[in-house]
Length: 201
Image (cartoon, rainbow, N blue to C red; front, top):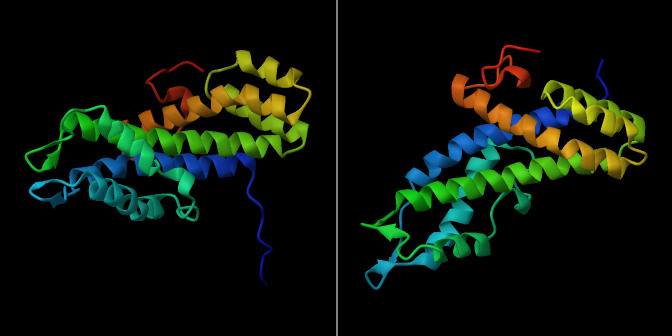
């Protein structure tokens, strides 16, 4: 007997994406460590380097954030990476990316994915009926110790208001998932309230 495919809840979708995003953030540092700097006329070929940074990150994204890896909004755009390079006098040193450039790139990749996860979760709340959106929002606010938001979410009259008021809690949930992953190497048993070592409820 085949089961009908059940649409995941707002919580399940956010949880899946947050877990993927956190793993991806960890994996992207390894990708940047291994990136080679192409040369042209014995100088770093920045254009080719940016293209390899954009293209090379796709498999890293795909292995952590399936099934949405082909969506370009997960990755920093060519211009965003180019702009980052332009803020450094010499982004490449001894044939490799300088450490501070690599750190800035890792942050750019992570932030791009995180912002997209938050905006997708907000978008889902905006397209949900008000009451289920409120329940989702209040649950996230409570679990991330943003209890002051629950009254604001409860008072919201439209899905857009709910989405706007829950965005801080979604961002906090993601940040706490990153902290938990950094401490434990996985998200097994993840409880946002305890992600920073707090022991109170």
